Length: 188
Ligand SMILES: [Zn+2]
Image (cartoon, rainbow, N blue to C red):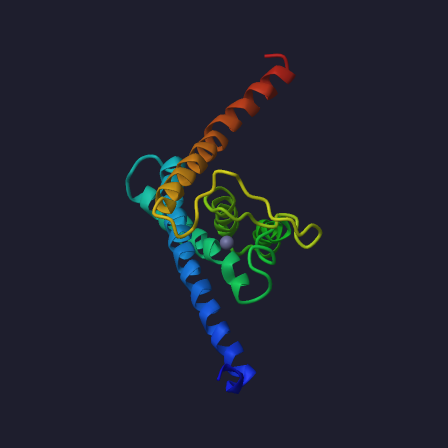
């Protein structure tokens, strides 16, 4: 009976099933990436403009929109290229870091791309191919949580909090350290 079904039909059915599973995972992913980008932008807004007034809100919007767009970008490789490889690597991040310098446009998008990588590495079981296309190996952390798990939202919040601690250190501690070093070097 089965043999009477043409091969193309079976293949088409298989494709339909597998793309259904893929899109379900991607939806879970997008939720996490948007939550991460929005929370990160709110935190960055307060770190950069701590007053809590309209300047803070303005900063959150100015950072939040490009960061959220940047955070959605890497998963475009589910449709074009190899997922977690083609748009999930350091050369792509480098392009987004260089873009505003060269074209005076797309400022802050790189933060979204970077936070997407961090969340894929730390917040999910599968890693990403950081050095693609030179090295196809996917790098991840052993404590990753399955994308579809209930704990993935909690993991997203924890990762975002850790990112904000690092951002806070960079924004506040690094300039102080640089001033100290400068003072020492000129003998004050
Ligand atoms: Zn991804």
